[in-house]
Image (cartoon, rainbow, N blue to C red; front, side):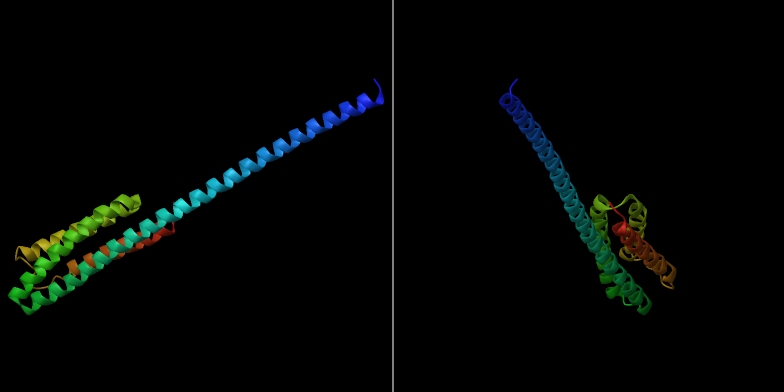
Length: 169
């Protein structure tokens, strides 16, 4: 074997190893960029889901706070003894309880499992309280303990929602 042939074999071998190394480096770069793109897509998806949850929780809590304001108003009307006003507030309470129930169902679709029980407790209390006014059997004396319970349930849902939103998905 002469020097020219040896040089040619060496050059071809070096080119083959160089091409193989370049191909391997390109493969690693491709896998790295694909991994990065997947991670970024997953992060964007998680952020989108968290935003959907935040909006759902905010809508539910807004309805719950509106219901609670009506509870306070109904209690005041009952103490004042305004018959027609009580009936009107009772109807508003019932409609607000229905709205809260619908929002509760929507919230359960997005909610963490730890939120289901507090949501159900608040919804049950809302329907119970509203139905008493609609049926005309509102408390004639003191409904303070019920109002306190509804407020506590509302605070429990709000706290659970806050904790759930801070938790990684």
